[in-house]
Length: 96
Image 1 (cartoon, helix red, strand yellow):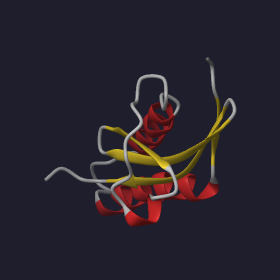
Image 2: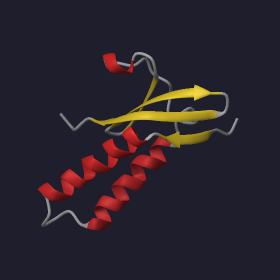
Image 3: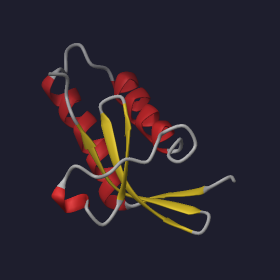
Image 4: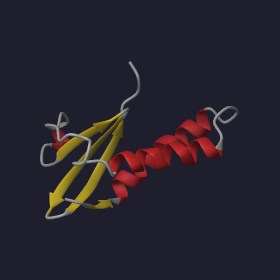
């Protein structure tokens, strides 16, 4: 079943602000092209929710009312209503 995806403004802000902060911190080595590519990759990963990203039990208390999916360093909280997946939040978890 193909899904329609909606990314709430909160999730957009979490993804974009993360990479804007990376760009500011590493301004001499992290280009605008890197920023654009990383943001695009995070969005593309979100569009794989319920296709190749498996549904997981939320590990964050604030996400208990949502489903959760994981791709790379990104975690996504989302809802499903019919054929529409709404991504309500995103969280980047760095390498340990």
